[in-house]
Image (cartoon, rainbow, N blue to C red; front, side):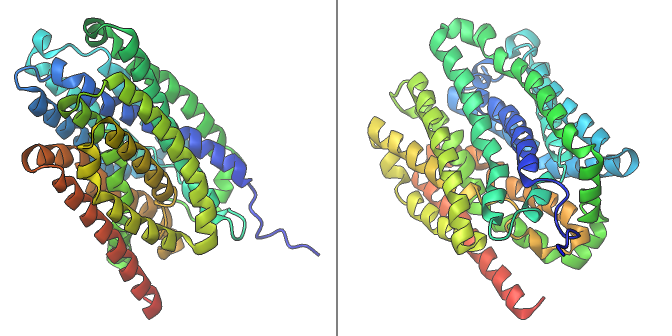
Length: 426
């Protein structure tokens, strides 16, 4: 007789669809803000300083969402305990879409003064809280339900939302930037991607609710103990795993904004290259990252997810050594920076989420996976555009090399520490 007791009651492919749609909508919102931080916000919200300082101030607000994201996760967990997973998800995605859409209605600094900046900051904080609260456990469920020997492939599927979200956001901005005059773009054109975010989030909400509110999924999530736990117990009993989980993917998370948001600011400030053409190149980069993610799934299933992450950390470190040469190498060098960077991002980020989540005891896995992701974003990615642009403007592009090298070193050390803990049986 065939024992069906341990077989998953939900198909991994169905979970993957929900994860990709949900993550794509979230990344779209964040990338719309990130691109606007370079193309729009310095002129409209920080016209009282020069373009460099205005961009740095916009990047500071960009980081604020990642600072409050862990708080959003904890608030979301409380809402889930009291009102259920579907209520939490509805509140989070409504807040995310509303915060993004309201940005399209904001007055400029010339119209409202400091209040315009305050409103922009509040909307950005809303995005961060919503992103934390939108954790639904589906990526963990997807990895746990993956067929034997295919965990790397199915873990990668959840990450495809990142290049998809960037592709849509970048395409919209490229179309508007190339099709409108500068006056029209800064007056009203830039607002359309922010309006689109609300509609995309509504679609994503229904796609995800279709999964998490069904009896089969709820039963599977409970069977896997994918429910909120006491954070004090998590930190007290498995604090080192939070530390490892935050630092293990650091190279990938640091590279994330170094190849998506930072180079656009560098091109606009220090290069003669056409911004519209560069946006089109980044669209090609997003497609390349998606293809590289597919390859990462095959690679991880062949050599292991943690070994893949370590290998890519070494390649990211090697890539960082050539950043000054590439970005100072004219259009051909800058194009190579984007294409190579996106390829490495796809290969590494495809396996960055939840690589060491299995370290957690089952009852801690749901909350542990969410908080390690929050901390990894905060430590590795939140301040990357701000640090990279600020330091490179003052000390040169070699500072970006140092930044990525340090992130790669953290990844390798965390993976080494994780192996030592496993070998010692802790």
